Structure formats: C-alpha cells, structure tokens
Image (cartoon, rainbow over all chains, first blue to last red; front, side, top):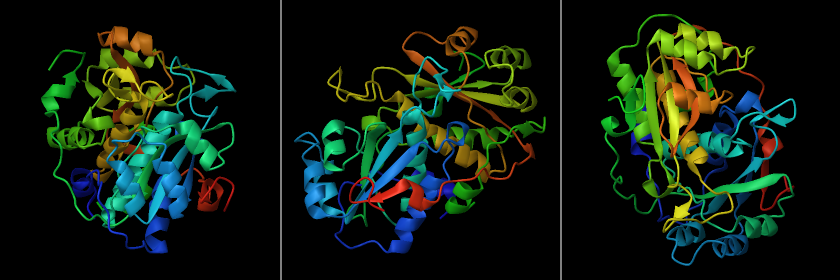
Length: 182
Length: 182
C-alpha cells in the first residue's frame, strides 16, 4: 500500500472479526516496530503478543467500564502490548539529559505508529489503548520492574471501519518562523 | 512509495543539500502530521516551520556542542519544530487518568513518525532531535506556556544517507502471552 494512502486511510478500529491472522502478517507488523527510529538507536521497546482469551479478559478488566476498546480486545484474535524500557531514551552517559526525563513514551509512540500503519497496509485494524491500569497489566503479564506498560492494541481484520474523526486544518496547528505567525 | 519500503528505508539523515523544498512537498509532510492518531482525537501537537537562517543558528545553539545534527539544521532549507499541547492527552474530564501523566510525548511521537515517513516517501530526509534546551527554544520561537517544545527535525534533500544502524532481532524484543516467554 502507498504510504500516504496508509497514513490518511488508517482508522481506529473498534469492531473486529474473529478470524486468525497469518503468522506472516504478524511478523511484518513486528518488523515495522523493529525499524522505528529511537533515541540514539536505543530501541527502548518490547512487545507482548497475547492470544489467550483468558489473558485478554484479564487485560480488558484493567480498562474502564465504558471503554469501547474492551469489546475490540475480546473480538480480535490477538492483542499487542507495548512496553517502554526505562532509563535509556533521554539519557546521556547514564544521566537524564532533558527536562522531560525518560523519553520512552515518545519512542514507543514512534514504534506504535509504524505498527498501526503496517497493520493497515495489510488490511488489519488497530486501536491504540492507553487508558488502563498499567500496574495491573504488568502483574497479569509478569512485566518486571524497569519496563513500563505503555499501550496496547487489538490486531485483527476489521468488521466495521469508522469514518475519520474531524481533523484540524493545517492552518490551525502550523506556524511559520515563530509561534503565532500563520 | 510503498509503506513497508518506507518504514524499512527511512534513515536518520545528518547531511543535507541546500536545495529548497517545493511547497507541495512541505504540505504533504504537514498533512501526514494532521492524520496521525491521538488520545481521544485531541491532536495535541503544533508545528513551527523555520526557514530563517538566523533563527536556525539560534536553534542550533540550544543543542550540545558535539551534536551532529547541528550542521544538518544549518544545511537543510528548513527545520520543523514539534510542540505538544499540554493538558489534553492522558486526561479524562480534565483530570490526569493514568499514572503516566500527560501523554503528549506519546502523541507527538505518533505524529513525528508520520512526518518522517512522508518526508522519506518524497525523497526528503529527517533526523529527530530531542536533546536540546527546550526552554531556550521556546524563548527563541515565542512558544507560550501550555505548549511544550518536544522535538525538531531538519527537512531537506539528503546529501548522504547513512547505512541502517543495527536493529535487535524480533526474538530479542517480542514475548508471547507473558513477559519472558519467547
């Protein structure tokens, strides 16, 4: 699929078919994570692939009751949980070097976008879920200290693809030469 | 350009031609930012396009002396500075709702990856720079409170494209069903 078409066409999919995903497609999605850029090439992410329905049920319990992604996680054949490796991005010689502290959120964001685009290019849906009890997810998936549970997404064939939510116009978020200058 | 080819082929480019960029290409890059996903579609980012050589020189002074991206920013015809809008992503009914606080770093990461891929698809180079004095950049670009200067990248035609830095194998960062299970 054409890159720009993928960027414009990707939607947050909250309704999935139960059909399994070929291993080959999963591998391409993981390759997309692999090739994301990162702070000094620290590649400060890990991925947990969850297929077990009982584990998915436990994950869903860490989301708030009204979250529409609960059903999505249960429907789709698998869920990918992205972790950040702490203490690498945003560090120089072992010390935090910007006022933002650890940069794993930024780098996991880069990797997640590659993941979502690659999935979309192969006809698969994703929806980024970040609103859950990360401590409980860490317990369920045996995530050790030093690894932060950042976000998860179901991965599967979309049953319904929603229309794009409204976007700001370019003029609304772009400035020239300095802030406030359109 | 094919999406997967773009993901694999994108490099961090630190050497640029001075050739200007057609407005049309810049617009496509900004459209790519526009279509990134974000927390509850908050689109919590802004972009400052800097072409003025004197401003670029000031920006470069906020990077550490040895940073190889200094020269890149001076060479490339323009630099894009990405801001995060504080207090939107990671919030529910006005309150922080995860232990990670503000999620703008994650969402700006998603947008930045779209930007880098779209640039690459049009033959343009980028290199994400996050290691600088953000307070000084905010002062130079008149960025108001409530907006965080997150990262910048030069944008231009590559003079040299470096070979890909080594990546972890998939087996090194992917787990199945729970952490530690390969």
